[in-house]
Image (cartoon, rainbow, N blue to C red; front, side, top):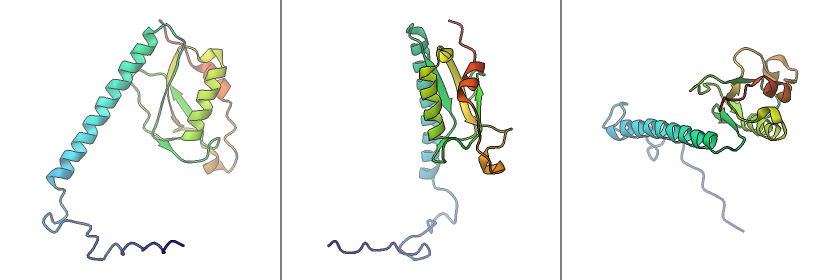
Length: 152
């Protein structure tokens, strides 16, 4: 049998300092540059995604583009969803991975979802089951029906 795993030292032990003794709680230059690099990576990723969307639109193929908010691991079918087709709008609210998967599968089977691009997130206005205690009970097919195909 394998030996038991050693437990990590408690957070207040000297082996795991929470701050550098040289910064007095201030962020270091390396932390600041890492944060700036992450922001630049996000902007670069967004421009690559936009380029890919434009390539797909110009291909002549039917498409369904979904721009989900931050993905989370909540249960699917509980959160009320919100779709938007405003240009350049990236959702600020999160959305369960399972709900994104459900929307993508429904879009594959629904001809009304051809040549549609939209942002998707948790609704800011309608409560989900977590607030009301009842299932969200939304019809994704009806939601897809409201989305407008893009003009080519």
